[in-house]
Image (cartoon, rainbow, N blue to C red; front, side, top):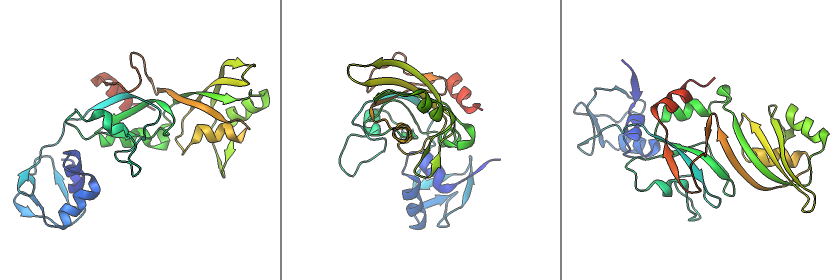
Length: 239
């Protein structure tokens, strides 16, 4: 029988974040099978009767969505500056969703939203090397040497990226810009922008077009669709 930490069970029921759930536990507001539990790290099984402030909790059904994130939206649940967040687009749903990974404020494209913590941890674990495809509009034109550098892995801020796939989609000599498709397996902060900067090019516009086998087909900016059971199962078996 699988056991899970009490604060995780509360969080997955959509009652509160895991951190707030911990505060509820230490404050004596949580009971398991009728007994007050204040010890963090307590594990419970699926059949345990858990109540918060006397109210029994029910675990949420698990849901994952492909979301077409617009530019000018932050990939967090709340923003100290009052900016629109990805969670705001899902207010009508009865699930407490959060993003798997992040896209920059000024980056648009494919973002997965879920309440499935196990799936999120699986996809974000570096060992799984989930391919992510970006399309960038850069200033200037990549030279053959710069393309080779990106393909081999480029150094930035003391880090060397893993090898990337590079495909030139369009070059505009008049505007001195180029549209480049970049496929990477990592998710470092501002990674795509920093990779292009490392070879001497500024990213003017950026979008994520694909995540694993998922695309934005059929979606417009600000809209989403729920993954099928088959798609979720396929994500869980990515290697």
